Amino acid sequence: MVEKDIKTLFNFVKEKTRNFSNIRSDLLLNSSRFILIFRLILCEKRATFAKRFDVTDSNIANLESGRQVIKTIQTSKRYCSVLHELIKNVEFRKNANLETTLNNFCKLKDLDSKGHLVNTYEDRRIAAKSGLIAVSKQKLNDLESEIAKYLLQMDLNEYKYHPEKYPFTFDSHKNVEIKNKTYNVDFILPNVSNPLIIIEATSITSKVYQTNQMKGSRINSRFANLKFSYPNINFFAVVKSKIGIVPMSFSEEIMYGKVINIEKINEFLSEIKNKLAAVVQPG
Image 1 (tube, helix red, strand yellow):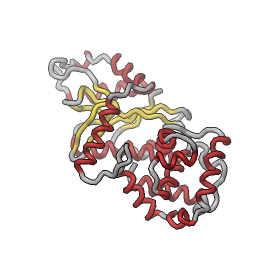
Image 2 (cartoon, rainbow, N blue to C red; image 1 turned 135 degrees about the vertical axis):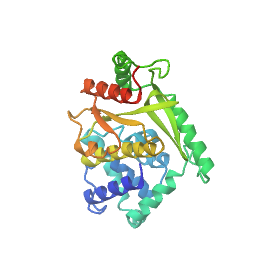
Image 3 (cartoon, rainbow, N blue to C red; image 1 turned 30 degrees about the vertical axis):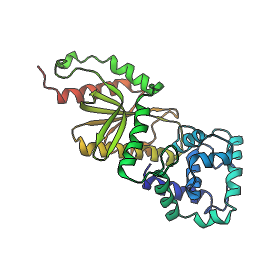
């Protein structure tokens, strides 16, 4: 998440709460990411913030990232009752502005997983690399496994693909390094040493406009930064939507790649084949 996303989310929460003066009991219902703004205003680490709700820091992280959604009014009420008490605090009211929230976002972003302040670029690089190594060792989730299955079923013989020159394989959860930054990508074809196609897998579970917009913005930001260093790579955001469609609020944010609905698998495989065929000279 970048400062632009925080600004968008802050303004949305400010509007929904009437400038942080009224917390409705359904505020977090299907909009769980709003909780991030309250933590940033307080400038608290997740572990500290989580104690207010008697949950783990992992629970808070999942809510803030959108991986977990509050689906019942009872759960939303429980969280919102804590937030309601928070907004009564004079210090909270004093810091409930965009400038302070963005400053706190930058401060907290410079904390590593153990809560230590990361000061130097080298410290940041080491902390980031440690996290990326952990991600690279994770098993494929359900959507990623589904994509992998389809990729393995592809037949490229019709394109006279040269396996001796471009062995058709794919790498998953691999780190791609660009200047001063490393990204862990879901899939890279044919492999990390010869990147031609990058695929990011994501699920849509919410109908909330801002939630899907920010998810699309995050993926597009990754694609844009990678495109700068690898201008010939083709990017795909493969989406599994649990709300029936891929929302326009998500799709319109993807300017450096193509959005593919996993339900349209033939279109997806055709796109992959065409992109590979375009960069491999037929024999």
